[in-house]
Image (cartoon, rainbow, N blue to C red; front, side):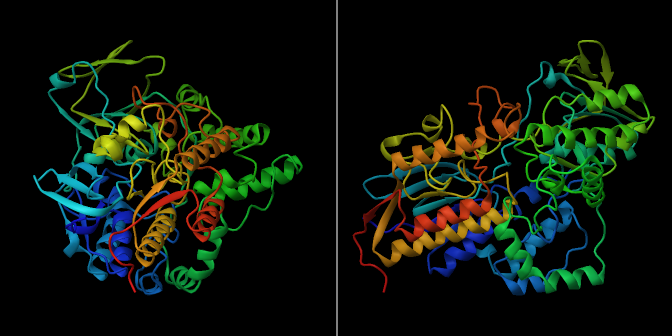
Length: 540
């Protein structure tokens, strides 16, 4: 075997890529990161639309690997905005001197495994070709933009933009007639902000959504002191929490085990606290239909109280899925925005968009003159970024062909037939159904622990056993079948992408259970993985 250019190539310089680079360096391995943007931050580099903020509390959405980093960084709000998160990841990149190994404005176009040389050949958008013993994909679960193709879109005389491609300098929509297509998490965040500037705002809603108030607030000195004092305690809570959040277990296990007065009190307390934790008000909200229905009706009643126009309220409340079956959205003044005179809700489920015209949009029932069309239409989730690259494994097998009927990888980490390719938050891991940055750390720690094992034992190739991969995928699907998650079409099931196989591809058994399984497998000599000895001595 000839020596490769790098020990490791990492794809992406978001939260996952930065931490992976830091840990790989700690093993004494050479690494190169390729990042298609001109800065770090991943999601928080690209998503600059008005109102963009994380829906996980700042004190949970941060790295835990460095106590010094925890103590020196000070968050300003409960739910951090995009600019604050981008500053955070830039601080991390600078503090740990990561930029010198990152090549910006460079997209990986192809990664091909050379079986004879036992390394990956990586080709970039800049015409560069490098080899690496290992590739770590840190491309993110939500990074490949989903841009709908409406008839006549190329004829529109105004501006069109996807929320994930919002310009760095922002966009002044003062006096504009703006149309927003999509009312998922992004739309719910952007719509209230755009409504404050636009002359007229038309919201084109296909799927009404449950949304919980954020109850966002600035963090005062007392709260910051408490956070810094309790970071380690909160870390232990994250480890025990099924979605990796630093929260205590719910007060009541089931909405059905208490009387109506107690249930209402518990729901009111959870509503007053706000945030995505509302979905965990009771332990069985995600598994028991009756408990879910009681909780969902409580939310519907709260939303109805916020909207003045009964017809608009009805359109916002025609929710056809259980609470939590789609991503539970956190909102700030979203429903109240529909009380503004300059905001119009258009139901495109019953009145679908038929085409884009030079002047705006046309639906089955009318036309709307617009100056700006905003596509809040989300992403090709979980697998989109991986399949946007030409990834070829052993024998030239294309990853898109392997996953043609559904994506899966052993533990979400390694897909059989693609040796030495590690995926961070890949299909088969908790991924988006967790505090992603906490899952990222767990993945990177496991991957670098595995690399250390290989170095110590003189191993140069790791792959997953197809039988172990199939069994893990079966477990992922079996657990999903017991949950309300995936019981309706959404990006969680891939239903937003034409031709994509439908199904939940992330592990719903809990991040705590998943981490324990990963640890057990490692302790058993990486059971379910196959290795090949290197033509080089083990490190001493």
